[in-house]
Image (cartoon, rainbow, N blue to C red; front, side):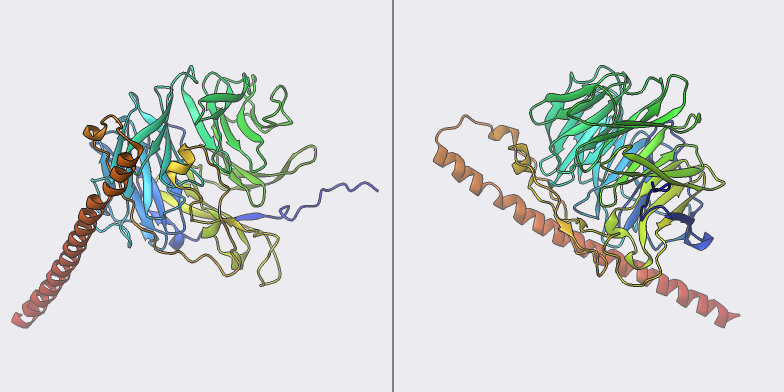
Length: 472
């Protein structure tokens, strides 16, 4: 007997929106017409791009700070134009990067307990794009490497530790880039472009590895992401404006491995992929639903699982990394859905009767430790993510602050001998480290003084209130 229904442990996954008191209310979500997620999440914070007068800003809220967000809540507001994309560093939960219409990329270090005052001074400003920067994505395994793509059709890969543009891919794209995605070990990138082409690029060699023209026939934006086995999943539109999801083999991109047609809505489908469970979630901008599919190694490869439907349309969506989920509740994904004035967590759960840790749902996942230093990656090394077990839940550890060491342009003198060069190399890093340590000490002192002043102010206000009551 042929089995009619395909067996899958994710067949009964269901989505559940958070209760009202667990939402983030009264947030003026950005109205910029740009197809990014507008939201980035990690196990500590949720960051949301908001409407801001006189420039661009985004909120950074600790996950536990639910309820109504005060209008005077501090923001990250260093850009002079609207912020278009944000991305948390996968190796440091305090570091976030932002790209803006002002053509710059900024990297921010969020204080340990969240923002107390608005932050306008980034750790480093990366300038190299001539038009607005709409795409930001960190390298998955190497430390301090950030990729940005702008409307100047350029991709720049930065070494954040030195603030330098290390690789610039200028002539690869003839039109605007819609999205860029690293593969699992960060050796390749895939891009989706307005010319309807999907490209797989080796950024260090500056070579095109594979290309598919007209991946989707429709004129509306397409998206492309790498899967853990090296295949590529794309979302786009057919000639009849039907939304499609397709799967491609990088070795042979003549024909797709699978194409599924979904509906005729016009919202761009943002794909979110979980490499541990091989489940892809498709969130359409302006839709009120999240569809999810399981990707397998056997035909027909892409299997529709279910749809989470709600009443309110989504303006954007944040996707929690696996290490931020509650394993005791069999939570396999958590989204942060942006409405017009609020952010609502949506939890995806596999129904299980047992309270024990479910090994099959939680294989070892990518942890927060980097595999390579930035220099090693630029020299040609690759490394898979360092995996961690979630059996006892993820416990965040304190990460060192991001440090930017600017290289002195005047030091670029002709090399004399190998020995003198290596001696210079070993001697040069010491002064900045000392001064940085001193600067850090001063900043800590200033912070403690600020805290002391604010606590004294509160005390004075209390005393004045008590005195006024006595006087009455």
